[in-house]
Length: 143
Image (tube, rainbow, N blue to C red; front, side, top):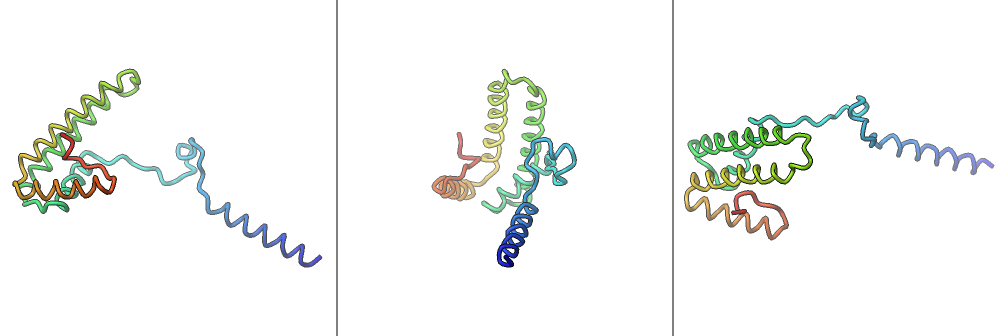
């Protein structure tokens, strides 16, 4: 009898501790304040700086190049936000929004390629080929 009670208590303790580890997975949980970690959208400046940092990590940009790429990335992020706001709530215009955003991204990629030196472009292409082989997307090699 003691063994049965001990087993029941152990089972209860294990199941309680396992359920305590799970976070709420209901769609309205974040809105209701249940899930305190609400993901905030990054600002235009933060997204632009992230683009510069990622590119710098791959090709070692000069300070002048960083400033130019930051300006391009800021323009891109601002334009993409404007396009998304323009088509917000219009499910039938999703393809038009996607086309406009792709045009903005293509303009950004061309601008970055114009800023980089030939050596940096080769380094970037090599790294992108490595990423592609690993199954990761690359941003500047989509033209």
